[in-house]
Image (cartoon, rainbow, N blue to C red; front, side, top):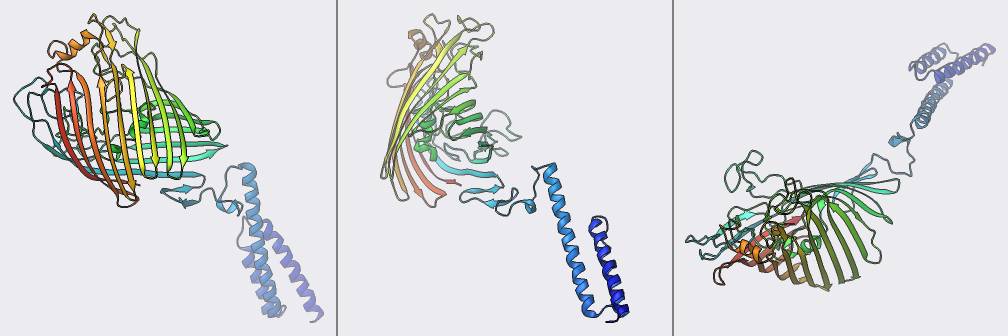
Length: 531
């Protein structure tokens, strides 16, 4: 190479270095410098200043410098963002060893997904049954509002009821539930929403969501949005729940009842199977009082050596069938509590529990009979039970006692008349059920018997309940009992086929031994699918 060519090449190298410096400093404002530099190098090659090999080498260097400048720019931007707002991160900025915050992955089991640090879980079930009910056809047999044996009449008569068939939901309506959970600063946080529609038309009075009520065209099942709550807790501290969910009293009774996956009693005698409500009643009112979904603030302890407990305040409820009016003051919340002990493993398990509830039913404006305004009459209840399992054999035993507790629904018909007949008094109630069962592979066979009893508060109240037209318009409730047999076959891990037979007996206050009892039988066939 001549001296002139060496000098010209040196000048070109100086120009190239200066150009790259300018490009690195202005890479965010100009994208044409690399192209211009390549044009200069191409001109020098054409004039013979640079050989083709020198041109290619310098061209490669320009490309590498451009790539390095872009990487330096990205690093600078990342550092600026991290310093200004450390909480804002993109996938590219995260450590490769750490999962991306906005990454979506499937769950190991169940229906749902992981969205970064959030878990979204979708659960639910769908069920449907053909229920055929054969009522008591003797029109001289008496029934009542809370009687669950269909047939009979309120005041005696000559019209006999006929058998009724329907396709309907069982004790459970359908269910679509969403849970969103995460962990924040060591706290487990979750929100839960549960929607529970039935498959049959809603039988409420009047129009429901624009549809006709009852078994008629243009009806609608309605939407029962019975669950919504939030939880906050730590493993060693326990969990706080605020929202609407199952109560504590009576909770284990229904969760261990085999008719939860079936039908049981078709319903109250007022509608029964001819105009079905949202669900059947299973053993509700025939062995236990329904726990219900209640607005609540509840604290649950951690489980220690199988022992756990919970205490909660619930929205106070009224007795819609109280013998005296105006017990609608809500000066105090309902209080419920629960203690549970579980032990065992490998096919041998035992669980024991006891729950309580109490509420002061307060006289509203103007008082309730002789109960002055603002004063209360206290309702209470306590239940107890066990669930035992031994290699496929199962046994559930449950019982409850209370005063003012009522029948079927919390506080229903729990308030009668005092001895003077002018003020309120609590009626004692009790009940139980026993349920042996056997599970073999995919087959479950179970039987249960139970009853619920409501006693008059005193002789004055008994006369009130026994004399329609003088006291209340119909006979008062005395007792419900039933025998239930169930066969269940698990077709898959999701789907169960169910067949059930139920014989129900109801007794009213008053009447005679030949007229105050009504009996009925029902058969249910269907399926329940969980996911």
